Image (tube, rainbow, N blue to C red; front, side, top):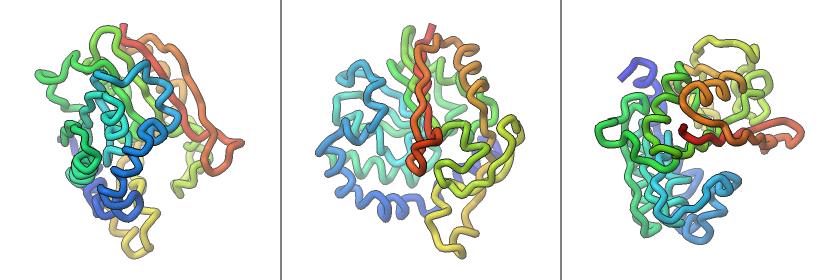
Length: 251
């Protein structure tokens, strides 16, 4: 496991289970919401799935299962790939409470076992801001391609690169040049929800933030045909871009 990946693991296992309980409810409470309306829990990403029943989905950096469990409730066969044991604990307990089964592989995304998973999935799905954890987007997209069957689909949703120059989502992260290509140490996503004394103790994450063109060009260069690119407004200010989704098919 790479040094920067190990740093991400330390950050995402720092009080993560307790954080999910505090912000999303106990696994039983979260499961109740998922069961009530799983498609609603997928939010705007639901429209990118042609169907759910029987579809094999790789949920990349699927965190606490917030999208994996609704997908499973809708009939998908979901495997979460994530680096955090705490995330796995919360996700598996929530899935059990919801009465569904998901698989959860705790691993470095760049070292997924391709003897098991090469060409296995119909859909590779990611959302909620993950690309900045990977320092070589071309190698990352090559792994995503390898996971998919022929004609499989990638749903790559992430925070809009506009956030590099404006804190449009109120993440309390310093802004930088839009074209900056450096790797820098930043707070992990949950740190801002803690009191200052605890916040200071959170392990930092080494980030590499990309431009729109870097993301789109990497998708195209790594064996995908781009079908559409959508943008969503910020939840903090609807006049500014907040998220995007790139939808592409494996050649």
